[in-house]
Figure 1 (tube, rainbow over the protein chains, first blue to last red):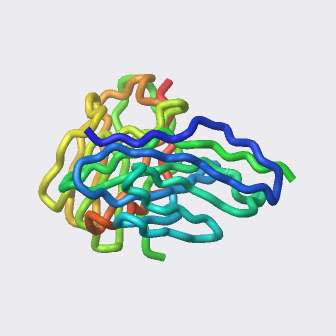
Figure 2: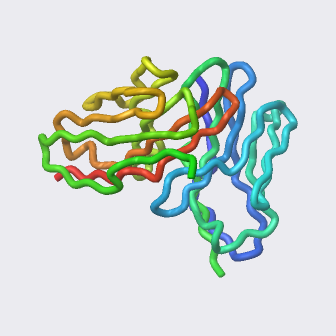
Length: 112
Length: 112
């Protein structure tokens, strides 16, 4: 079946550092890929998405590129802020299934 | 504002009590989902509804029932609450295969 693997956290960074959160997937067909963010005490919010190979999703300074050859969708940001502290989830959907697959989530902590 | 509305936000139940968690979306989405989120377990799918009039079991359906009342509303019922059902419950909806989810803000349920 489909699966998503994320790097384990927490990831701890200083403000203005470069962020990478790794995400790899296995899936049949050509899924769409997503990153969600969950701030403390809130539900998940869609951060960005990519629907086909080589697409780059971007939002709020975050970027991720759909890499079919490496089955990856790594999340990056050039300069993180304290307000980026949250849990980030990688997810995929597609192949005719109504059930998306989520990774376990990666906690990001940014210190001033 | 368009989105997914969950009620209640907080609830404490005694073991054996019943309750219904309500969820409504105003985005004309076809698919709706119920998840539970527990520390270290990520998101686990309880039930989903691919379209109005259909419901299907997810990964952890035992102890729960659902009703897709109409296209807007999808409720989750606990008939006899157990301490193992202490969790944060999220409702989500999605318009189409390539679209991301929209999540509600969650219901924090404690069963004592």
